[in-house]
Length: 448
Image (cartoon, rainbow, N blue to C red; front, side):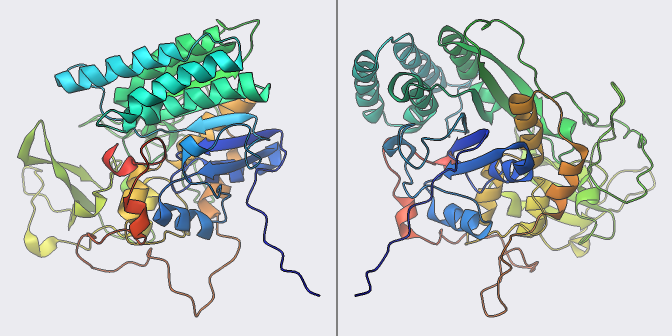
């Protein structure tokens, strides 16, 4: 008699650096881990959104069956082998200069995080977590609970699994920095050398300006106040009106995103034109959907020789025009010069995803806008895990990456095909993805 066998759920294999990536998104960090495989790096992601999970599956990335970060923990068989915890929990803007609501949210997170610190045994931590969870569940904004989830995982790995994470990497928008700085203090008391810094994506060869608050912690109970090495800039910082540096290398092989080896010897920033040279052959100007300085009429403009502005889930609203200037050198915008909007593939390239990344579903712009740029992930992971800069070949491997299984001719094409369509407004593939859990997972669409 033939018995049916059910496939076992995905789980992280044992590895030198086994990563569990919370709120993993479409794989900005996991694809970097794939590139670093020869260094003993493996990763598995936890992701709530069904459309985003479809992109991850098409890219061949490991993703847990359980979608909700709050329903999993370090002892779960799918992630128990992990030695590294990473994550970008969705969080509201904890703006110091902002509203009373922003102040209150920040105060709540700092107060609740402190309640999770300094527990010596499992029972004491469980009691504290139960109180914290009951308070965050009652809050109107679920994201206060999300940002505390990595702290729960860190504490449970130490107290319940009996094996703390060797490395922790957390990243988010710049307004989360006060939370990361508070976490640094808690992690030092928990046995970690930890620091948090602001990183600019264009400093690392991403063709886009974007600031990320990054926390790196390494378990080192005897040396918690030592310096934690962070990535050092390889490319020029973008400033409005600044001249682009000449290249420091003559790249005979035409490789994009090369990095200089010499100390302060940085490469020029990588421009939109560099990243999109396969699809945009003439110079162009991007007119942002956002107003500059709070004025909706004063929309930001970037030329193709500059990095893109921050890519968000509304990237399809940016307009592109042939670059035309008047006699005084001012940009002239004419409706007849308008070009096709950015395709999903192009928006992904501006986030430093490979051209062949298999974006899936109808909410791709949101997936791309929410992702951490893979090239930035390479720099962060290399310094956090290996304590050295990325290997030169990894940039080429990232650029040339393709999914292992090419789709057959009969299968539906990925949405990365360029079409002059209006902005995407349709709902995500799965109606279930719109009902978010109260206690964990990825509400990133409203978070960043």
